[in-house]
Length: 206
Image 1 (cartoon, rainbow, N blue to C red):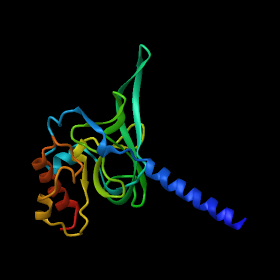
Image 2 (cartoon, rainbow, N blue to C red):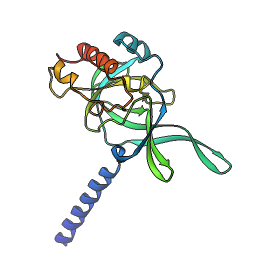
Image 3 (tube, rainbow, N blue to C red):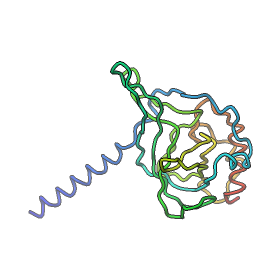
């Protein structure tokens, strides 16, 4: 009986591990499609970014991404009107926010989603915002949604990876690629990096 119980516990553990890993689609190997071109007037200074986004937090993304789509039916065919990916952000620092505390978990809606297209999974994204990495720490600039949760309203300019070392090195920053920053190929890396450095000067440890 004890052996059977141990085997059952082991089997359930393996099942949970694989179910947890299966939560996240394989975004990297999907076809990609840009839903909207780059922002017409992207924020090029921290002040402009703060004028647009009123909640600034630092946190770690949970591995619990869920696709949320708005659809309508035309002649029996479901058509996607819009979509986003909802994830949990575990707050490690509150940089500018009300009613959010360190240690809280909040729901954030990121401007991308995965859906079937021509019978294949495809990643659809706004501007140049590609999926971030669960377990990694980011600084997010967000706005509250009327229906609850928070939205990355400035697309790729809403999210900045937190450097792994406390004192960030400008030379190392300049060597970062779009892929390492979770940006699409069309992203204006020069503009993004200039704002990224300004964000770290204000909120990071240099």
